[in-house]
Length: 232
Image 1 (cartoon, rainbow, N blue to C red):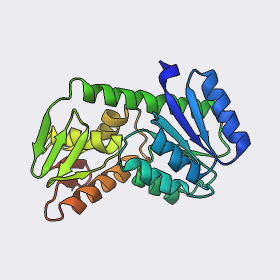
Image 2 (cartoon, rainbow, N blue to C red):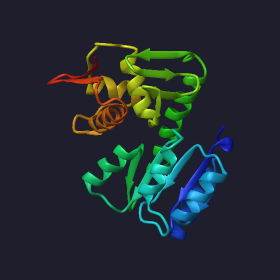
Image 3 (cartoon, helix red, strand yellow):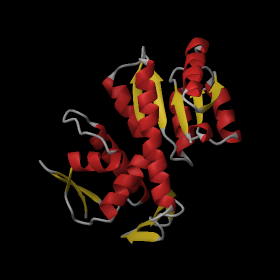
């Protein structure tokens, strides 16, 4: 139920922070507000949240630092809300572990829709992992503990976003099957694919980099030019 969903709002503009908290509470969510990066880092150490709404330009510590801290040990959805509309910056944040990006000024209905969508995916992801996805999957040097929701490569744990985890799981359970970008997006994001959307490429690139860092001598994901990707 929504009253059990904890959302952290990290926004230094008091008016925007108050607006988001008021609207989310009206929808039945429970919220906590932080007004600086330093405060957000402290709150994240003390409490557990189901989603974070995150501004980028913050006093004390910027949004990128907050994303990195969260992704060290958590898969919770992170929605960035920023006045910066540059495509390269959006892609960079997605690569670092953000799940969505909303540009200011925003429509509050869009924020609510994005929050609902991310929570549906996250709750479904968590439920599936805790339920039918039990045991350990192994492939080459990869070990996926589906119950603990952890991934190890050559005995070294790597931290993935929930979307990266789902992509890896999709590949490991379908070795040598070629997936189009549309098929990956539909399966992982459960949403209609937009041809111009670079989201899949960004997440594949990020996943590759993490696998390569842990096991530089092994190739895992191959690009099938003109079609998509597969695990080899």
